[in-house]
Image (cartoon, rainbow, N blue to C red; front, side):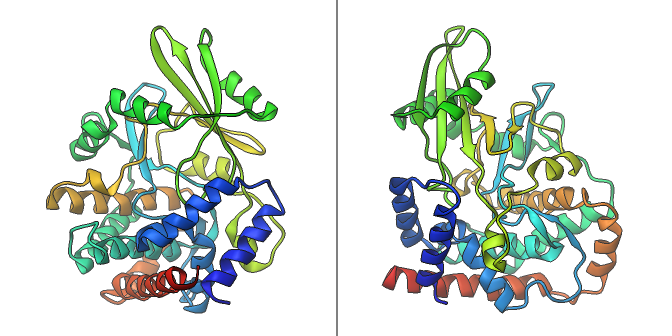
Length: 356
């Protein structure tokens, strides 16, 4: 099955389980065409096929409740219950049980794809070393969440830079509103908005890459003279179910959040068919464009590895088993595996640009 056939098959399967937004799906295809990194973000279903083909899950790596669709732009910031700024992985839509190395290789491969196309400036092998060093340190020692107050100044600077300033954030968000509503989503959003919110407007919302086409709704309003917003996103069945030919199931979002080493987001609510979250300035995804200096890029890659370990530590007994497995690995193993998968992504992307 080639990339075009895989995409058609996956989208038919996905559309049989929930209504898709054709306009957003078309935009997703454009993103897949535009860059190899955008292609990687949009095609986790294909990654699973290729990972199986290349034996990525082989080698006896201990299994964990893994993020699945992990990449270097799947990190962002939020406010915890004490209003402290926190940084970490912010999307678990594809969380499923898998060998821990699957997450590490995908994270490293995403860095290599970004490096290959000139959107991330750091040495390829150095990037993999930083990710693996952060992961290994966090697995072997009691790690803590990335709370951006007294510590983690470099991450705090990223989260609070001008690209995420309130005026910029609200201008961008409000400009994208397309008035629309759905009774179930509207009820959830009304419940999530703070009491006293006025001028509420419901609209379709488009965000991310991999989940484009899956319905999202946005509610915006005014509270005490300033904007507030909430998003409700339909929960799609796991791509891993399609890849295995298994019965559709959704990610165990609540369990992975509850067990991971992290400071929770009190505005993130997991419903049976929806994910509801607060949208606000400085509580957004960190993008490649945010990484300015070479030292900053290395520090952030290191932190990404450590945050991945924070998630994996939530699987009971996994840390000790992973630490033992890591000690048996040859030098350069992560780079070698990530390079093979990054090359596979580039090959698929070229085929999509030609035939998709």
